[in-house]
Length: 153
Image (tube, rainbow, N blue to C red; front, side):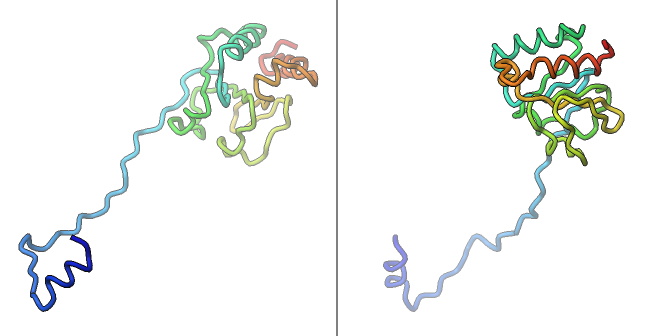
């Protein structure tokens, strides 16, 4: 029944709600699951990681003596699940892309220059696809910064 027909049919009638008063339920804030903490010493943040970039990342990290078991790779879609401000066990953070707003750094590090934040070594690099293309010497810059980060100089 539409509003106009109901108005015509029930004009002059007294209507009662027989269900009783509806108790207003208290609005409860949604319960968010606890956020995870990265467990490995080296945390790598990427926007996404196709297979070709995964192989490149494995080779890059192997060149400085870091195995896949020693790193934790987080894709951008996983960031909300993790507490990226409290990096408990993490000693090194390598970002392939600009994620300074996600990590809430007070000062944005310069690309390919080792920086420190809250006692952690920080390295900001271009996305892995750009490093793989190596159009502006990204591989050389990354290699120099990684040697410094892992004490291979």
